[in-house]
Image 1 (cartoon, rainbow, N blue to C red):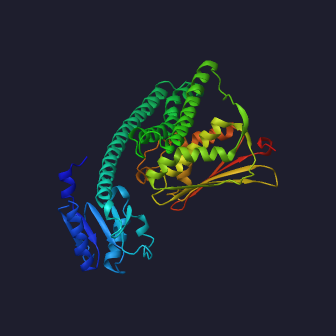
Image 2: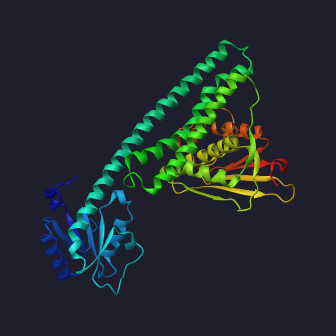
Image 3: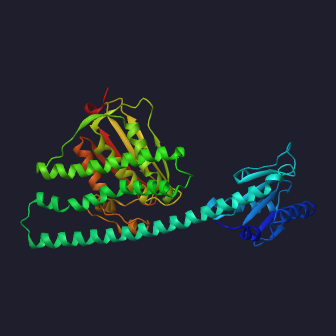
Length: 410
């Protein structure tokens, strides 16, 4: 943390078009111990571009100074200096929408008794935010390197599998499925593990304050659900090994579709936020339950939403909608995105195991394994549903899941 000497040397700037007020307030700052203080009017774009702390005079008229303030406040909080709003008249406030995103408001001169405490607190918070951002960048870099190594290992595994099949053309399809098991698991484990890593890192760094903050309770629940999802997959691997059976063992129960979608979105929140993608779902409050295997159903939703987020550019949107058909009593689930989309030939490739589209790999920062869609399709069909997908280049992709009436809980 900064010591007293470093605090006194912090560049502090007053943004104001009132010369008399600027002179008075700069004197107050000097009296508070700050040695590097100045004022600016915002008339030059490079004027005082990177202060350590910025004060904004509420009496400033619309013009360059207010425009400069809006530009500064448009940056994420971790990438800009703290901003303090100075209000000279407690009865009349001229705060606009951008000013409300400032870090503190001081009444002048009534609140000057807490000026030094305010400055020190905000500068300390800014330093902590910078440290957190740096740690976050380091973590992302490490995760990216590990992900690249995992992808390289998967490629080597696929190459070894191809050589094995070429050398042993008589292998049965059952043995081929077993050879693919490790690759399938790498895809199924990655999404819940990312959720665990993301939430646990936030808790470990105490980004929202000391341990005990109420947000940690929600994150703890998310970690628990993600871990349960992962444990269920591992148990399935053991069941397959023990039973040596071709068909999946389903554990049917009445599952709330709305709750399943909500749980999926909570798991995908970190991934979507990092990708700059908006998540939304529209499931009616009276939407019927589905008789299905809860873990496998959530697995399908997680795979499809994760896939949609990966191939949607920043600023895009991924949505899940639920419909009940009055005609035949079926349930329809539509997972839609406005991402890069695919042609019909690319879609055919994407639906085959390990099918990877070169355009998709070059248009996203996340390298896929080519298993998301085929694994999801196979799971939906095992649950008794139908899987249908449409896509248009540049417009996005829509996946429709249809579950017949006999699976709908009345």
